[in-house]
Image (cartoon, rainbow, N blue to C red; front, side, top):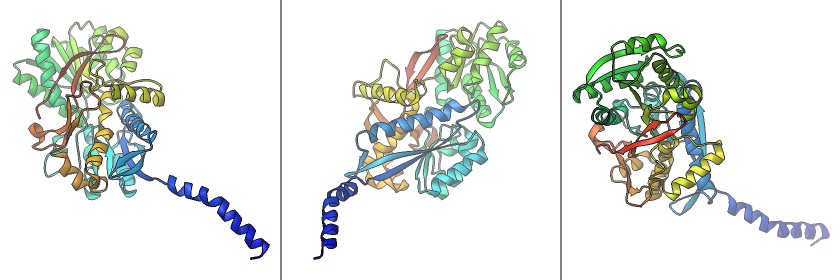
Length: 396
């Protein structure tokens, strides 16, 4: 062997360990999509989806990835802003599924979730919307899993609470003039009537982009309700509506069935939003497990602050991964994932005590398990932050 060959052989031998280390460190990637509203009045809803998925990914990736079938996968979250526009949401869904992504978190309202439904079904993919239209979750639909408690599930529980503890008899409903909010309004009206409440306003609404809520709130207050429900209210609109009601002298209670942002409420309305009730994050301080506390710390590290709504949206990716860990075939086969959903059960990692089960639910409303079984938490705003009003349960 000549001198040049000897040098080349020596270099290969010296580099071999490093080459082998590089091969050993190669890791497969599990891509998860997020398709939701991340700008505009409802931006908080989609951003919390994004941040929660990224936080879960951070926690698993810090430990080497998620173990599925004896193989570690790095989790990569790909998020797209649909701007609450159905056309953009469809484009986003097509982009994500064209990359082979089978599991997508979002969208956040009925119009966008219904728009992407055909895309998801054609791609044999599964998404987890935070939208309440029942046709997404009932047969023959087969591509959607509701990610939280629906308005028509929480509404009757809140109205019953108000009736028995606050003496509410007259109730009014005010909605944003969009299909999902109007649907929530109609369902709320029916639920209130079944409870024997006197519904004094059933169809009042305001246009998206409204900034002056005094005229519509004046009309609602004129019929003298004890309680006002803000159906489908966006986080940026809620403080302005609360402020308008209080400035007009309304002394009753106000609620919504959508999740809200305490920081926006405090900055815009402050004490004028005091007593405002909304769906809370599904992990109150009283029930938080050590794992939930770790999640909160990781979320704050990524985002800079905690959002109560993240207590609900922490569930989506965690549950997706749990199903895959139990049945590795579900990693690439949505049909296998859906079959596993029907009997899946695990200890809820976010609730302390170890006795609470995390399962898919929805039989009572959809005729099958097509909903993430998160705890039902109702919050009350104290002028600065949310406090837990009560924790309830929905029918399976």
